[in-house]
Length: 399
Image (cartoon, rainbow, N blue to C red; front, side, top):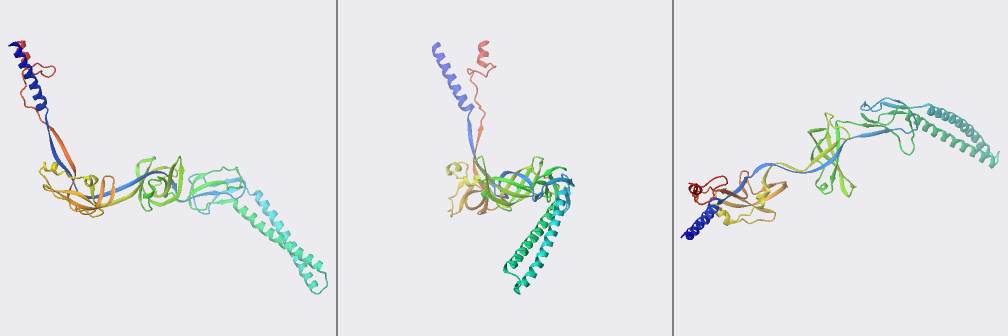
């Protein structure tokens, strides 16, 4: 009898444990349709790049003659006008060259005038047969030689005068001095390259950004597209611009191919300074006030049996023409298909050109809700209680 009682006790414990695990921790699944309304909004796609802020017009001012910088009249950040004197070179040597050229010119003129008169006389005598051919040819030779020397002296005079003018350096444009490369007393040599003295930017209220766009994105970039960018100097400010040029020349660096894109940038507050690094966003697609649906709605295909569990009827799909796509619209307890014509796509959203109206409810998927049920099973007196507690059986046994 004792052995039979033990067996019964074990069976009761096993059954109670099974009921507790199966019923006490059971759950049920609730299904519902995930939907969203067709609304009007904006869609956009963008390309990111980095670039450098530069003046629209930037002129390097140099000198055509070698010599010593005698005076500098402007410095960094000075505002200059076109034709304003900004520097002078030492003119002593150039002035001496001018005086020498003037003397040479006077000498050449005198010789030319003499030989011209001599040629005229000999020509008359030769025509009358009073002088030989040799004498006439000599007179002609001396005249032409003197004429060539006189022309050469006149050309040298022009060159020397121009070099003297080059010693007076003026601004070629209205603008701001952003760079000065020389000091007073410094010697500059004009050889194969013109020495740079100043860099002048025309108008700092109109700047541009030269952005390097990756070859994978350059096909989407066009003139006239909206651009926003920021610089580290003003992290909280967003500047706007417009694509004005897409340059065809490619730049290859570390096997990475990029193309330069020129972006206009208004700078009325003069915050943007030449050389700043800009983080650029080019909006290659931007449309406002268009009907949009989520991309998930275009991928949804209803499972008729599953949706029937929710008490919703699925109508047969309508035929789809070329260039169209199906979406499913919920109307009360019915799912109806719509053939829609799509436009541009952005991240997560697609433009709807035809087939849907604002406010309609499109289905994006099925949601499964797992709801835990509390177990309402009486605990067996023989089941072990939670850790740290004592059950009734143990209490009875202790008593």
